[in-house]
Image 1 (cartoon, rainbow, N blue to C red):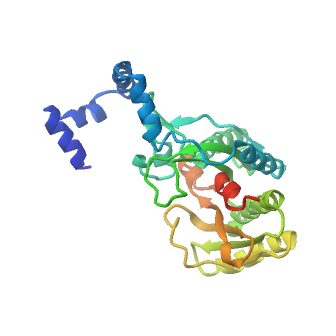
Image 2: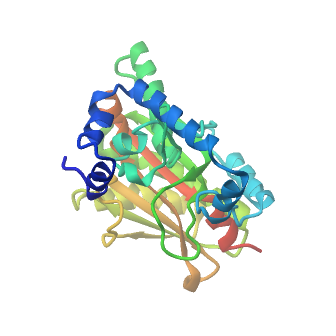
Image 3: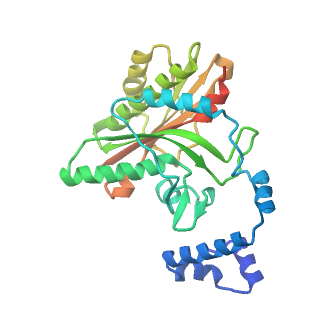
Length: 318
């Protein structure tokens, strides 16, 4: 991989031509962490209270959330109470192993805040829940190599992302209520289809309970595979959702572009609004290959989804 222009400039300015090579390949990860701890300790020792206050005022990473914590707590309480019995609620650590986002979710490492001690700040809770699902599925398979027992996890976490977002409503840190389900392959995408129904049903129940009526909902599913799967979506996703929840608009969405290199087989969006003119995308989810990769087992399956809690709290605030 060629050096970036930023790295070339820094090496020229400090006069060490192989600085990047030394830091990335010649120093052991534990030694690099120790070195950076010393570096940042020395830099912090020379900071003044005034400079800290100035950064607190200007840095987009440390700004307060605009949402009342009481309203956010009310949403989270309803969401947790709306979880299907199959799901276990867990609380994640605020950091994950370095490379979680790039190795598991195939997201550019520049989009996360990498830290010393070989960790990164939590940027996507579904990545980390996939790690936990993989550990639990591995243990199940130690007990029974052909175990079909699924693992369903849910968490509500505050995430922070490094990339710049456009728009006045875009912020660096936000709360996400996420789900992650892992299991073993079944014929005709049976695991993915029934798990999507389980996850989508949760969001419909939680949104209706929190936002009340009148609330219009639209489910849009994108088929990322063969055209024959459209019938499966109709019979195994749309039909049970409409039977369970009544008037939910359900559509196939072949025009979706985002997430096509992220999800496999199937993905979905769930929209909500008071009327047809203000429908807002609230939920994104679909099937991913993460547990297959983590466990080096092509028979493993994983379905994830998430809802932006602050978007729910602010978009339809009473």
